[in-house]
Image (cartoon, rainbow, N blue to C red):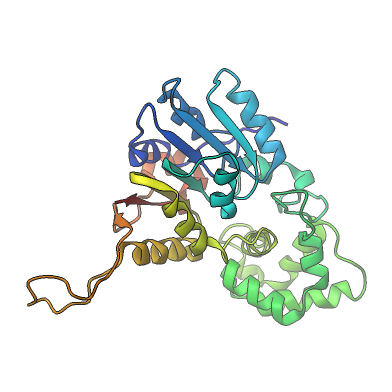
Length: 309
């Protein structure tokens, strides 16, 4: 299957990175190279693009898409380990980093990966197929209390308690192994009158995917690592699709920017606060109405930009 992924907020990211033609740029979520294919066009032969992804199929697709460029380095790994991954290839500082935290269209559409509630496949949802934790293990092994917590927190699903209770009840009869088995449980757990706002399984599938791939917990530390990897004047652009992700990025940026706590009437700072740089946009950049119409995935996207000083 072709790794066809339409990049969200593409132009906004390109402008946000303020690309220097001889600079070094990192796409920490390479995917099908939608963003990277535009970044590399702006680089000279002296410039360098580093693409990181934990999905080996994404890396293969990106290599094919960018095959005409000789200044691209591909890394199979997790952007949460960005400092180590860059250190391994003898790079200390870079001019810009992009993180697009959404699941790709390919992963959603490739039914064998178990991300989608639209077809029937094995419950998997791993972005990195070498890891052990799968959606099937989450659904069949997590306690009812833990299932409630992740479905409520990561999926913002108001019927989380009923869904978790019915999952536990069903798995006592037989293991829940496929996406359709889980979809049927979710449908039965939500009143028909409340199933009008999109697919009833959307929020629960999102929650399980986030849990399987540990998408929220390390995010603040990842942002700090990214900022530490930037040169002076370097930019970090992060696209989120979930309120918890956006909150974590916002908090990490705020902490990195720092804040003087001295009384306003003092002529100079005495509190000794430290700042890593500045937040470029206090309010997140969202997709235009036209992009939202053309790509529904962009409706929940938020872009936040930070500049290292």
